[in-house]
Length: 213
Image 1 (cartoon, rainbow, N blue to C red):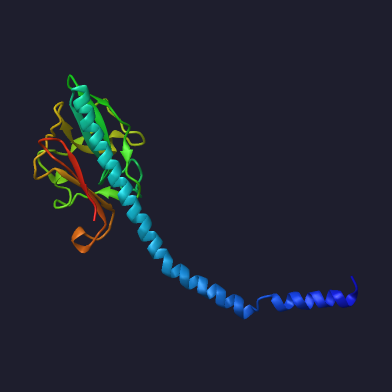
Image 2: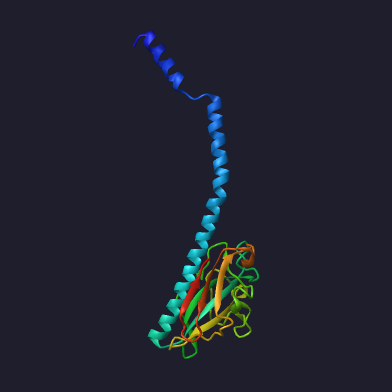
């Protein structure tokens, strides 16, 4: 390649390159787009987390009832109160954010499923109008029973509430306390438009229904 051809190619490539001003404009546009789209993406991810957690709750309750009927034994559903997500596992329990099912035979509880921990920052709402079960005096908050354990947590750092599905499918719940709502921790209230997923158990039939806005 001679000198004149080389200079011609360099000039041609130079003419095709972006100027500094053009690059700055592109970067600025990308910055504006990211500012506009990140909140939308975050909101979508949070909504997806609520939906998947609500589906987990729904499936777990349906499985508990089905097992009680098919095995002809009571099945207990426990909701665990644990330390907050940002606290050490040995801290005081403050938030309901896990659940587990147990077979009840001759008064002895045997784990039917492993504990299901809700994904951060999803929790069970304990507001009386959202989840009356968690304020019910019929299903008091219990300390860790002797001989039981919860992986990753000492017995002093968790408590639980529970109800049972009977062998014929009914649930020992009152109609005033038979629904459970999962929400995002520290979110606004439901009356202010917070995202949520509610599951309701029919006390008589044990049938499980759900509601999602």
